[in-house]
Length: 150
Image 1 (cartoon, helix red, strand yellow):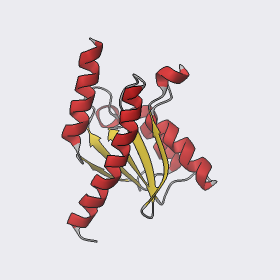
Image 2 (cartoon, one colour):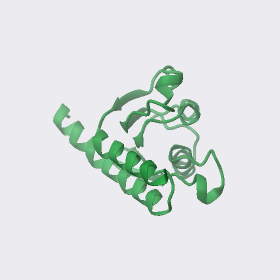
Image 3 (cartoon, one colour):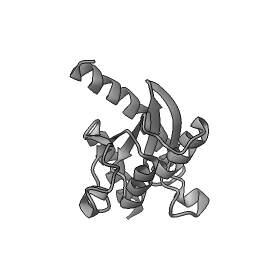
Image 4 (cartoon, helix red, strand yellow):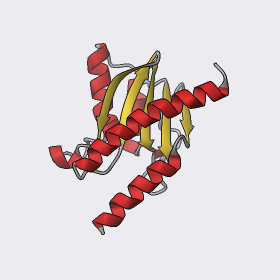
């Protein structure tokens, strides 16, 4: 696969994550969405549910890890790629470590609460990381959400 084909594929799956972020936005949740992909197939999708569940751990990444491992019948995601619209927080990155995620792709970084700010080596050593795919769209969505809240 060429780099151009890989980027196109990453954009395609990130667009699926944005569909989940839109669902969160419609529920007045922080608009973050995530999908887990294995061999070109979406096996799980989720969005933030912290308000709906009154659960501070109900981040999109935590929800999608649970959905993916449940769907696959195992606790490891070594063959999986997680697409998420915003950089995971340290809690989610630690969960991804324990799931032994194969690849993480996120759109926008989170300079206030992202895992790279706090502990850049929090992911499993074998996890590949890519970022910046559709980042302006994610940044715009987050800024608009929080501007409306203030």
